[in-house]
Length: 112
Image 1: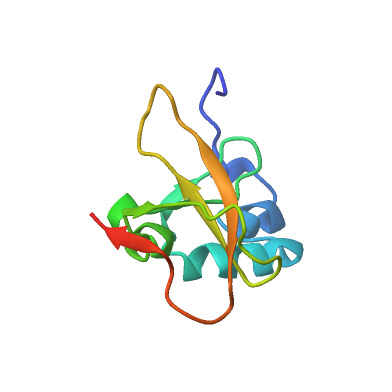
Image 2: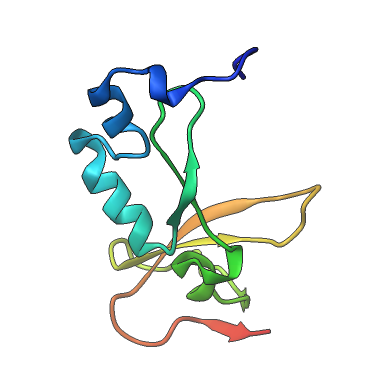
């Protein structure tokens, strides 16, 4: 954090205009984050003056489209197919694995 206030009016005009703007090289990343539910709420980064994107956890696509399911891993499942990231919900003993299931047919899971 700066030790003293930063007076925006004393900055050059081009620096003032850049405050809160997304750099052209990072526009694709900003678009991706926007599609996940993140948005600019008029806060800027203290180090680069760029936009700080925020989101309510429940409004993010990743959380909204996730499901809590019970799964059984089939050791004889075929290679290829659809990949899923599977984890437990424990905070202290968190585990996650990447599994693959056949491209056709329902996933062997039960919603809980």
